[in-house]
Image 1 (spheres, rainbow, N blue to C red):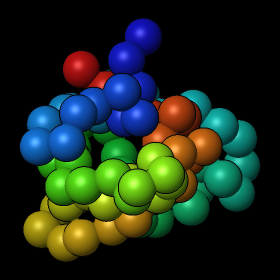
Image 2 (image 1 turned 180 degrees about the horizontal axis):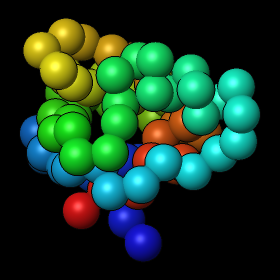
Image 3 (image 1 turned 120 degrees about the horizontal axis):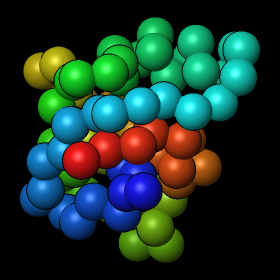
Length: 73
């Protein structure tokens, strides 16, 4: 299983499945990250957290813990 955390800088991935429960999963979906959407990884902070991505035409920073809950292909 490949997660968003595993995608290299400059890489694009398609969301396959979201893991997590309740409010956490809802928060990820509210940011525009849903099944089938393309995510482009722009950069990663020097210590690896957070990860800056482009999704649905806007920039978003997401924590590594949250990125591990997003399965991609």
